[in-house]
Image (tube, rainbow, N blue to C red; front, side, top):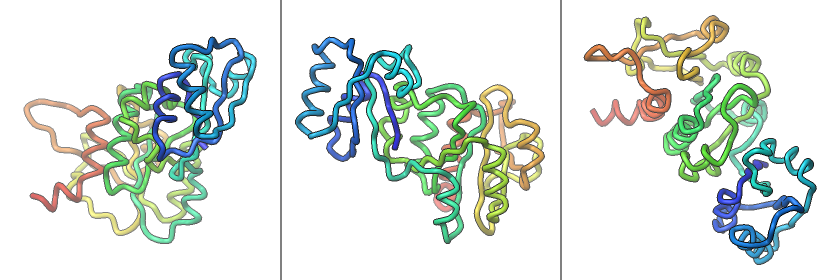
Length: 243
């Protein structure tokens, strides 16, 4: 279950018949006009439960009182699950991107869109440290947030250890690495960890990595935007084949 908030994101979700919406949460203080009236009307038409709350209770559901605009919705997303469930159910090699301290909502949304469109098997997203799944992230993902397999974890380091124990190689990007992203040929499951927009991956993650890879840079450019890097990783095989 994924909870979204904000009047426009909730309205757009209600307008999409492909999305299974479990419940709509509404602040009792809301005025039933404009966008709010449309939300209530669409929820009633689709037979979706509407639950009213005082402002404090709603903020505990949305976890963002400053931006929830008095409304939230619980959406059933088949791809939204705990990473441990994914490991237990997966019987074939997988490829994931994991994020560490990605704080820019637009970057997060663009990464989700690239992962969803690519052959990758999902995105490992920590519950803390990264930008929340806000209206800005939903907008930047162009709605793919609801389609993408997002694996949640409470602690990234614990999740990476569990994935490594399951046989996955843990990879980080480094400008000093000898092996390029194109040259790397995994023999089984692999997790590519992308770090903070400014500082990169933490020293703890660096120590946990079994592979260090680089993307060749030209003309004095030192690095790429993290969302662009995610797209290159996601489509590395297709690009290599096309060439």
